[in-house]
Length: 508
Image 1 (cartoon, rainbow, N blue to C red):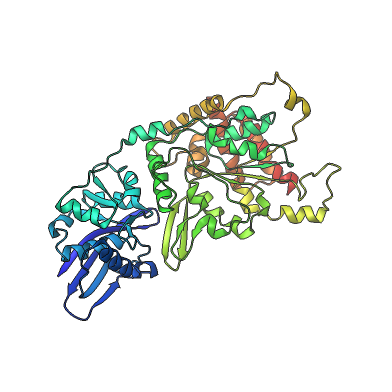
Image 2: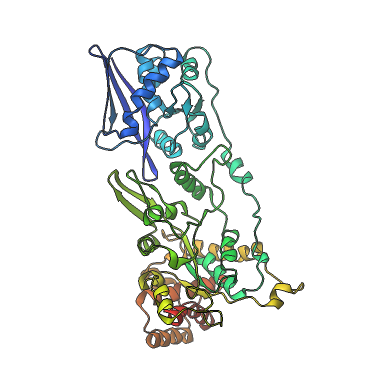
């Protein structure tokens, strides 16, 4: 008897359909799985056999051959357990064969017959809907995630017996969720605010510009200056996620297995802070079967690298291509995957190994400082738009009860107004932010006054800037002008932009 059950898998951040084809016939009892299965898939036969027996159903003493099509793509993970069990249960007349024709099954089985959650359900269900399948059977823990996709009927399955009962005695109640309601309710107020940070007005201004134009930024300063404190408040001034952005991030976190029933939809911009011991593989994504890394988990959010020179040089250099292209391509034994990686890089570092350069506390030799700073390569530094120095905060700024600190909501309002100008500017382009403008767009949208043009020409010649640095200055100037609600870039905008590109001359 031949049985075909629809299932799915994931490549990169997209799901694709997998046909689980089973042929059950007379012969020596054997259970073979073909179609490029990995070890976890090959072990499915033992889980399926034991789970069906422990549920109280008969397992056929037959020759069973299961093919996972398409056969030229490697399959991984335990998510094919449930569709394989369904093939056997159809053969045993426990499930009608016609009931599985327009149904989709995915899930891992325990030895007692329970159905366990798996990763990547959301992109799989999206691919099933695109293929015209309307009935979705997923593990109970994944049901709310699957129900985020409109136009399908989602059945949460707890056990094999539960599934069999659905087709014979007691149908499983379909699960529905109110996507817009979830999207609105889970937006919570942050417990951190820019008003918490005393002083550092210049750094706050630089971070406002970075948020408005999605510019990468580097903060340099001694320990205790507030670099990390400021960085952790960066998400509070970024515009809220749109529903499309939220779903895109949720797909990534679904694949990474970082969703749960309390957090089924990502409604806050990601803020990822990998430790400086992180390897290049943990940043870009890796493993024998590629999975998303930190730069993908930071998609549409912030990637904060504290103590930047302490990261492995190889790890830092892997950031260069994603920062330019907005995606990362990972090639491993298990396949080639392309992950989205449009993130705002925010980095912090000390000016020397001890962090107290220029004070009596500093004991670093010139050689030690040079070696420390050389860990940041010129090409990587050139890709960071804004360089800003965080100086120590004095006692008066810390202790004065009358000090005025602008809160995040006020800054966020200015950032959102600048983003609206960019949306209008790029409404007919694929570009969304000033930081991502092409050379052609820079010529079109970065119109300078005559004195601003003269200033940037003088700086370009005197400082021997690279073409990339020149374009970065124009992009930052465009963002500053947007914050001032100006169409034309004037000399004040250019002057401020140039000031954010001068620290590399001081330290490097």
